[in-house]
Image (cartoon, rainbow, N blue to C red; front, top):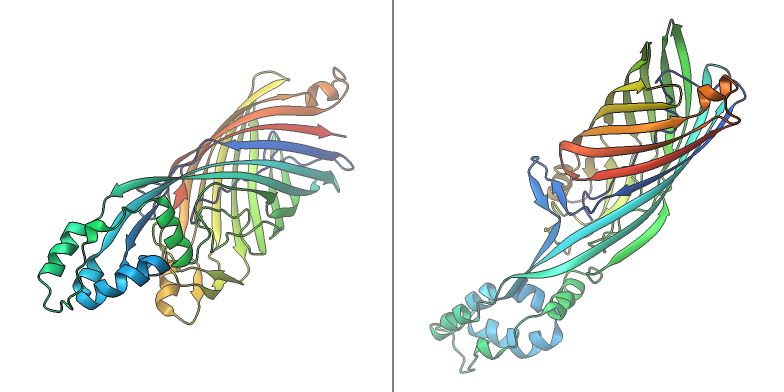
Length: 400
């Protein structure tokens, strides 16, 4: 399903202050559980809030692929009046979409030196999407009957459209499958890996109560892709190999930590089979192979932490992300432009959380093992071409 992919970043190696790295020889294992609230709205390409839904019109074209209707009704209707055939609408339906996604992220890190840390993040997705049919408009059989009465091409066959049974969900499903070639609408569930991230962080500058860090790495496209023949599914990965570079700094003042970072992510070209739909409501029978040159993604993240005492800290931050437009190449330029027009997005996200940590207590020999437990709240404040999501997460870290 278009633009419903929830990007759940899992910054396991973001320690209390941004520039900190693991000491040489120290290992980190982390598990984070992320749960979304119900996702049923999104910010469209212009930033306006809309419901996730699939609008469907059961007209003469979609009815033509239902053998019984085509054989007994549509052939006679078209021979009597092309205008009546073109205007026939049996029903309009809206299929409301509601999604829930949760991710378990597994992270690991290792201190190569006191300033350099190697790390990895492996996300595992579970998604459930429900589609509920809502009829938004009835048939126009009376209007079609009036056109037939006035048709100069009447061939003697008497057609009364009101004698037809009213359209129902089963007829809609038949048209979705037989005319458009999609799989049936309904509940969809799946689980599997997302894209794996591997990277190296290096603290290249140190000063009193602060420092600067740079990291680089790659994302591996291990996540499932959106299936063009399933309207209500989502992908767990981008489908692209990617490389990134990130840099930032951290500064402490008494009980306060101030952090700032910026990241640039670049994806390598790939090929995909897609339907050239410009929105969730834009169903199409077309399906083509596309070469995709992804646009770069940039992230800016200022954040703040306050140490209540040696055991507890609270933190907050803002993430601003923007992804530039992709370039699509196929045999049909019109479809390329259609897909390019919805490939960019941006978001502004609020992050707040609280952590319980035993690291300082362990260093002061007040606790037997270093680790931390934290909870976090993440909410989309504004954006375009993104789902409206609220995420709740809990994380456990162990150092050894």
